[in-house]
Image (cartoon, rainbow, N blue to C red; front, side, top):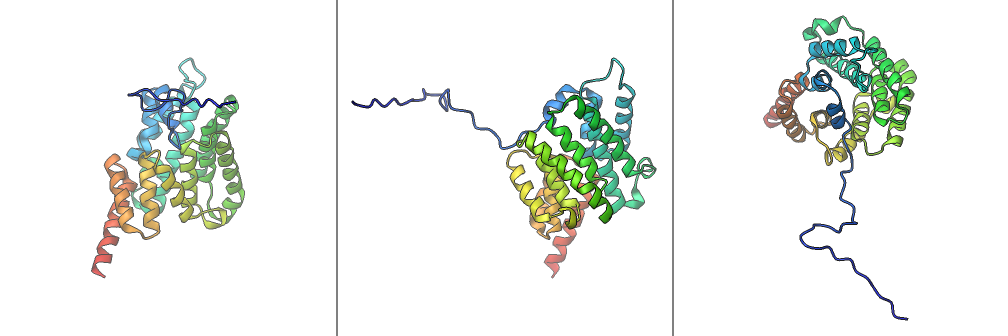
Length: 267
């Protein structure tokens, strides 16, 4: 019996057959639909870290927390708030480590562990209402990771942060922010709780091929700088400052990289 071979030919000018799946990015950004579903206050909160606006961040947090439990509360408010506390703690950590004399008064009076616990409380409520939501576990894990201070903090909080990140990846392996947060934890955490600059750089390089928001650019610059790869660090620092010229961390990093490059030229 003769075999009849059927070939499917795409009709021009269509770039691919109708039944052929469209190529997909390796990762997706869940914050894009979140920005559309929240209001102006929520959107300002989500971008406050890029602007390094601690005062505005606190004001937006207070505004959203004031409407919780009322008819004005939005479905995503606690999800947004949890991310606001992550940003607040990251900004505070920067000033604590690199510019303590310039720390804004509004941040100096705040305890970082208490900030993390406030964010964790919002994340827990949202997670209970949305048990299959992957990104809230990522945010929860980041909040826990900001509590890692010294060996004791690493022993108590490190495993919990790793567990939450693993759960987030299991629920949605294509969530780009889960992979970014994992890279950020590898960058900041001490080695005994999984800190690894090489692994952070590997994760960021893969992620950058699919999504390149400000924070990915910034942490590529930070990681290259930590590894003393200054030309690459300068490239990404320039891209970061172009996207968020008000970000204090990016500007300070750019100045440091320029100094390192100048020293290398002199030697």
